[in-house]
Image (cartoon, rainbow, N blue to C red):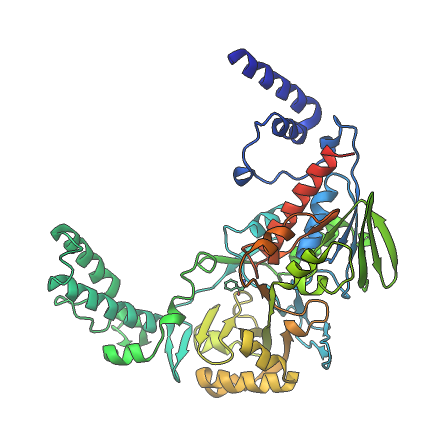
Length: 516
Ligand code: PHE
């Protein structure tokens, strides 16, 4: 046994020395020594992978130049694959879209909007925040994209529910306070004796006192955590008037708003690229080579051949060894192909979800100067759902608020309006929170309804169930691979597109290394 292991190790070291880590890794796979898929870290294809095998990088046509398509080309390009990207739209990036002054946003069956933002002002119309555990961070590092904090949770932002506006810190203090009081009193009166030992009860009470800032008799009677109308300075300041009753606090229904960032994908800190999310697109396009991308190329047919794949678009036809289709499933389902009916049925399974945002540009950052809100999100139960304050450019002259960011029915409602009516409605709603200043000093605005973007037709998709359709499309169909956030459990995140691209690249590259 020991001798055999040594021999294997010697062989692998030799292969590694000649062929590099990729070749060694492939050899380990052949010997059954590679770690399982789960624990495998992504190994980008590299030219040396081919040296021992006498194989060459293949020709790959990629349909769609969004984040998934660009990443497939970027990773395959590291090993010298000959990639061509066909993009139906006028620009690369897909839903990764940052709008600036001079841009023009065209909508299917809608008027074009000219973006009139001032110098240096931008609006991330698609993805806007990145969680630190996401692979998106690794691409930012690798591509040399500087990042900064995205303020996803701001105690100073507002919560607007049931017609009332309070600071997030106030809503939290009250809800935590009363919940702590109830639980503390239940514990103290012995209602939880069957669940808790005496020691447990003491430990729990100790925590609840802190959690709710409870008084000596375990009452919640308000707390400086709620905030001040005048913050302490030389004097003790003026705390916000005492909280409403437990009944009033529950009736305010702030629970959803104050737990928004509890999720593993929304917890603070989050991040954004400096200068706009599209830095990711710019850098990927640079790395891939702009000349590899044909825009305005609408694919009309995809045909698996015995020895390759043929992709037809409105401007020509291309034959390649493999195809990676990264367009949204509901659009791919409508393109004639010979991949079989089960593939079409699977592509039709995920349901597109509408999503929209409006960028409101102001000539004065009144939310900083008057509300003292620097970044973060106001949560509402209005149809605008959220207001985002910019996490960059603090104290500069102009700034862009996200005046609504909604999905499903609320997004459909706004999407169906003209850009002017969207703005009017967003301002009417925002005034309920910020008062008259919300309508004043507005310089310009632009709104996007993702379901109305001709070559995307949705903010993202929802799978009724992650069933066999989902797993079917995670594997190639003949020589056609699929990729996109919609093929992961990270839907509506660029990380999903990136992870999916890596999976398609790994599968395709292994196949090329193994097959003639
Ligand atoms: N990634 C998007 C966002 O952060 C959509 C999303 C929201 C996805 C919440 C999952 C959870 O707004």
